[in-house]
Image 1 (cartoon, helix red, strand yellow):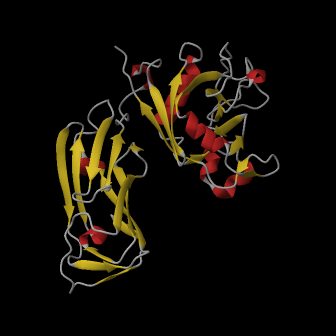
Image 2 (cartoon, rainbow, N blue to C red):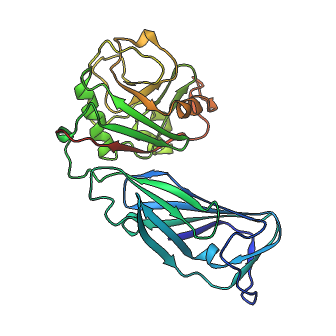
Image 3 (cartoon, one colour):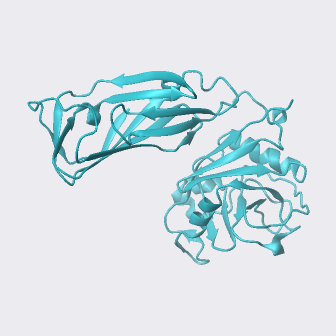
Length: 316
């Protein structure tokens, strides 16, 4: 499926066919949104910036011409015919289109294994029109008990970038299992970080945040059950992952927070069960968004958790 998002051009099929190679005054970029996916579809954004009047192949705007490399091996060539001919673009034109393709069409065997498959995608002869996508494994038939909790990780894919979490399974095993189950089941996908306090923490995991009409109730949602506290000696330092709760120690469910700064007053009061292995820069970006509301902790623009992707390591 292809959709033109922004357009400022006119078709001129009488023009001679432009050569599908680098075109003076035309800059192309190809990005994956997001760069890591779990599911059946890869979404690519092809952007075109024009700095001087130029002619480009119409297929660049309406067709698909992608070469794929799966790992170190050559992959499929994806071709969909466009309108043909050429298009006259004026200086200052800015185009952006989405190209949506099934994972199976890009990497037919990507979902068969338990590892992440990396695919490189390029539009031939257009410098800059290339990107890398990581395909996460399908865990629908895998149980949490089959995973090595100390080695399995979760990637939080947000609209500000990615954060990778490693877990303290020896400190809070049931909490880790709960988080992994929710992530595996897609529970967190589409939720928001609804509470952000710079130099303290960022909080998410509430299913109610999927619905803007429920904003008055954000912070009260859960998966329909509670998780018993597993307080431990882990310190709430910058990057620590911990469970949010109410006054009842055993009231945690799905909501979690990541410490933006050291918070010693939370030690032994909240269940710390992991930490960021990478993505502190993303944490900083989220922590510094503009906020409003009574506590001045509600982001004025959505901070989305697009997917929580489990990176499995199986027990030996």
